Length: 339
Image (cartoon, rainbow, N blue to C red; front, side, top):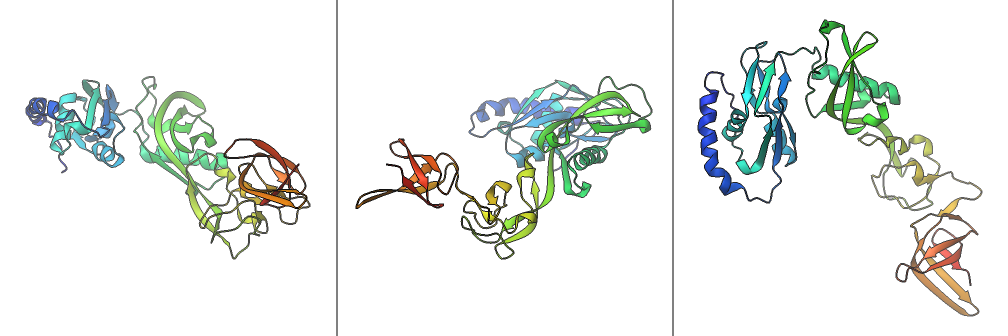
């Protein structure tokens, strides 16, 4: 249900609902669900006639779908450009009218949010563009390869000087690589080349890139080619996106078994035909063979502790006894125990 409060009657509605909720709260305090935490801000700056609860408060915790629904709730604040105030009781009444139960949220923060005419000439689109441009230039991506989502609305800095908004520009102050993922981004407000203020906003930034993906399971030491790999455009939201490989690795060999539809990393491949390829790597499980005269003993599931090429003597750990032994690398799955 989508309801807004006209300025003339919202206080009456909130008063009735606030008194009624006092009876409900003790009955709904015990719950196994994590409530959405809503912390009201003391002031916000906006030129909009209607602001959402997400503009008035910082929302955390709870189920994402419920938190997003609460954030989008509209609350009327009067005429654009006119200062007004929204009380905590009015925010509570809005949540109850929308059908949310008291156990589903915790309302804290300021007892009254002062809504003042906006002074900052940057809307959400300009903020997204500034971050997208910064990431694309810093990491050598096209702007269409960068996806920026705003999680919170930035607040007007208290120290912002009285400058014509048309002269102001935004530029993130953090390194581009550190913005990938869900982050709190600091943006500088510039008047020409002069930094006049800062603002912070929570964002989720991801990057698209073309990567090599397995078309089917690939066995260890199998050559990568057009038959078992293909190129896909995938979205990454981690700063270590550079580890993913590209089409240049085709012709190399897999250093371990790869699952179907798995993105291939640089560490998953080795150059084909190298004189001394690495056959085993740490945490590989191999079979150890011990031969003494006519006696031959094998033990599977031994854990490799150090990378090794053919002929190298490496340490291995018995997963049951935790005892460490040494063996000579024969191939990618077999080690000969040193007696």
